[in-house]
Image 1 (cartoon, one colour):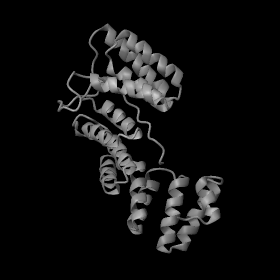
Image 2: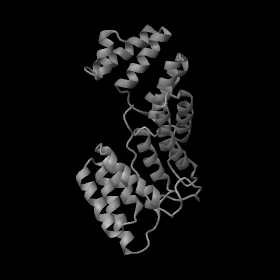
Image 3: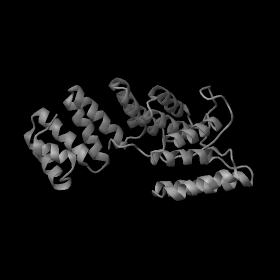
Image 4: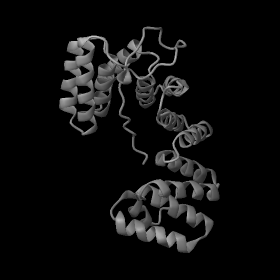
Length: 258
């Protein structure tokens, strides 16, 4: 659950200086295209995004390049290429494409979300959070839980638990089924020593998704701190049964609870 969230997105926009105030903008991928070139670019970009989501990075790259051959200023195509290169660990190419997408569409919330998270992974957390918060300010953006979650993860990289908790709470408020946000809230409160609140949040994780090794291990350690040996044993049994061999199971076997 701590793994990077791959947020599937696309888009483009009007030319303004990056970082300046822009009017609310519907993601470009949701806007009607004007002209045959843009229409072809959109078709190939949308197809490339489907391949990206399916894990076929080679074809996703090809479709993105075909899209740009049709319309060299179609921001969603650069966004797609940036996501693929980011997934492949090719930071320079990811930066080049996401930066170009953001320059072409500075008001686009999807692109701000993607580029913001990329910057967070590259040691530019403050600028990354700025772009992520620009995304959530757009009243037309339908999934603000994504950038709020990413902002929380970014704040954790800065070891700012207070800001991270605020972002994760907003993420959960925007989507009451955001398991990642609830998990992080549980973890923050566990590290803080507020075990009852941590228990409430980990219960929310298990309400919205099947328990995994990380969430079971956290729940087990919370119950251990609270002194509920029966609940601790129940989580331990699930961890052994479902996730034998995982790092969390190994920690349990070795008695490494901290």
